[in-house]
Length: 104
Image (cartoon, rainbow, N blue to C red; front, side, top):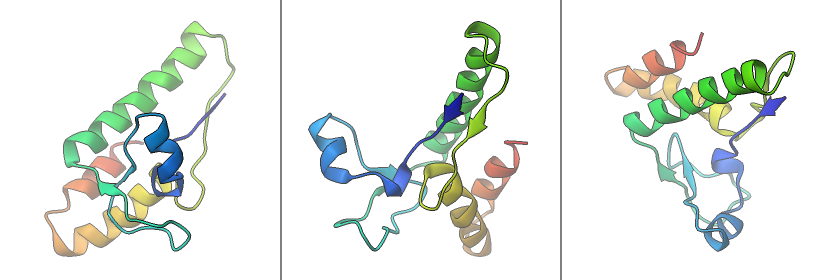
């Protein structure tokens, strides 16, 4: 089973057509996207982390998968979380970095 969240790698027009928001850990867009994503709040980042944990648990315990792979390519939500956490830790309280570190 592979889990992923596109984050800033998503296509904003496709998300909008399906009623979803274009969000990422920061408002820094990919150069190939027409607009910046809405920056997630600390609470929303916590929610995503909880959703990943629950999805992984469901895949193994309920659906019978042997393991779970997290797709974290460049621009995807988890990948961006690590990069943004490092940047924000230099300028903010470091809460985002602590959240990302709690994934272990």
